[in-house]
Length: 97
Image 1 (cartoon, rainbow, N blue to C red):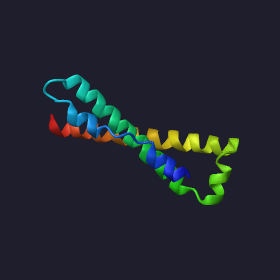
Image 2 (cartoon, helix red, strand yellow):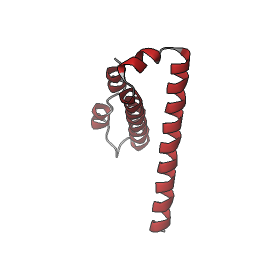
Image 3 (cartoon, one colour):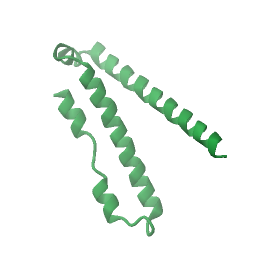
Image 4 (cartoon, rainbow, N blue to C red):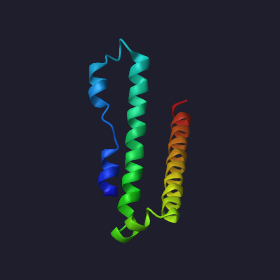
């Protein structure tokens, strides 16, 4: 159930982006594109968390300690992903300039 929920949380922004012309609405296009990327990243993180659990721990995930574990695992993966993104951006910036 958790895997299905994690897979369905991602919204589809491709349809909206195909209707918006980037040249005509550059700010709106970039906002919707960024929001779609963020939604996809959250869905991937949630799917990986749910996939790492077996069926027994899925039932225990609804307990308060299970919810706390899922929350801290989500925060950990999010912070790690942000660090990798910032590090790659910094390295790219240094190589370009």
